Length: 232
Image (cartoon, rainbow, N blue to C red; front, side, top):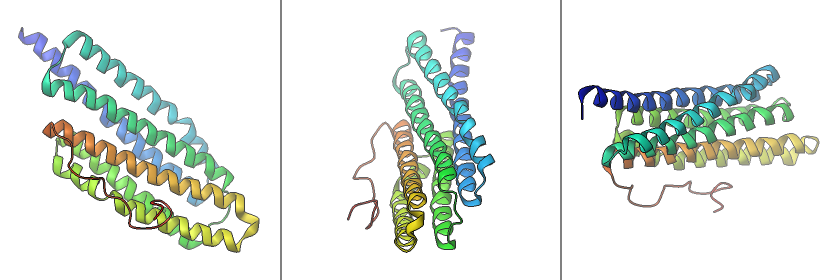
């Protein structure tokens, strides 16, 4: 294979990596903006978050096209094949995180009430941990670092526990404020969306681990100890 062909192939793989990083950065921003829109009762920020979801969708389509082209025309083998397939899988999880952020932004307009401090604190804590894990798992992808991926994988149960605390505080608020049942129901869905985002970050961690090692992570995925999310 000539040098210029090899260089072109490497550039295509790097462009694929760059697209994943860009998509991940947008997903992080969407998550932060959606939660802030909810906490601050900022309908304009919610509308902006909803409107920007198309950017993530477009990137996912672009990544799929890049992967198809690479497989069709380059016929990658071994690690290069893992690179392309992993990128497509990661983009799918990032797209779902974007969708869930959009959903939170939509629900923030329906749950437009002044939230008690404990609910604000709990939602913010859960969102911060999800965002931290998302950033760390994207770093693990860029660095091809299995240890960072394992750290995200192992901390998923902490997100579950935080979401359980959040849901319980919302249920208590709901029981004492019958006039806010509808808003509280939206808040429960917001909490569940955060838990699902944590799951998607963990999915990416598993993909990165496989990308780096060629093996799946041994054992069952850690889950929260008790409460609404785990059903125990």
